[in-house]
Image 1: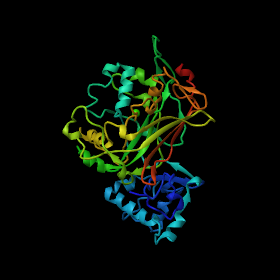
Image 2 (image 1 turned 30 degrees about the vertical axis):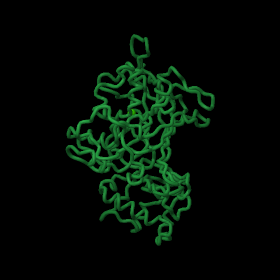
Image 3 (image 1 turned 135 degrees about the horizontal axis):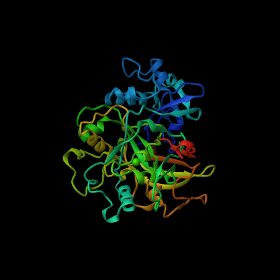
Image 4 (image 1 turned 180 degrees about the vertical axis):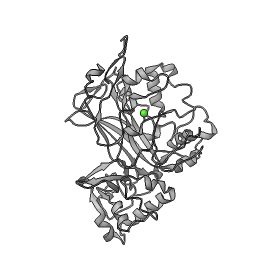
Length: 419
Ligand code: CA
């Protein structure tokens, strides 16, 4: 599919993340105003909340855009999502007859602050990147038995914390926790010394379920995708994770990119999961391509200094797709809700510079990275900003998600009573 041209000129630039083909959903505010729903187009935002209020955009009998989150639109279901896209294309396409009515509802992105685009009901994080699982297994256990015996059969996951999901741009405070440094006889309590990022995609569930759903039904339940940084304290994780998995190591914060890219925009970029080493059980088999070709990169910038790209990879590296993960999630009878967020698991490729975490990039701290600024890093230092970006490259256009950015600030001091 080629670029779809818009009368919003900036949306036709080859280097915009937000051409007419994209139309992602976010929540924005201008100085002194309350947050509201908007759709990105070029370097502008279409104020769809105001358009609904003005009677120009009607998705349901009652207003659904009069709240600063997209959950009510999601709750209308896939047919309404498709209708929204058709309406938006009609408003913004080159030569649109309603241009003069729509134009007053455009706001420059540069004047806006972006907020959480949806209310996160619950957050589940998976472990579905084969190269990541192999690398971590090699470091923590043994290269000969790097993949756990269940890994090729089950999309492994754990229940995370919805309360700690934040939008791009929010600072992340270095966590305190219980650590047991190598060789120490007893644990200590203090700031994590091995704070890390994990490059992931997040799937946003837009339709609830009761009981088990198929992979095809699960795909229909997904409203869209965001880039996701699952911040991880490796030293807290190493000490706490057996036998129940990560807990405090992953509960500090999870940052998501500000725009939910709807599935329809990603449709031309669908691709298959890799060849299976062992056949999956029938309930996990995919009826068609369920992954997306999304080029991803991670940059690190020390405080006040330039970014260095430290990893480049692709979402297509995943062994399990989000619909497979979602189908698996429901298989025990777990009800899923509108606003549930599923993290894909760290997306690492086979090459050294395609690894999606510092744990892997520095090989557990043994091989520090040298940045373009000359600084060296094994893990994140206070003041460092981590930015993740993702793009699908189309024919003369690209689909982007907006930056997924977070700056790590120093830990709170350990209180006297905790010493
Ligand atoms: Ca993770």
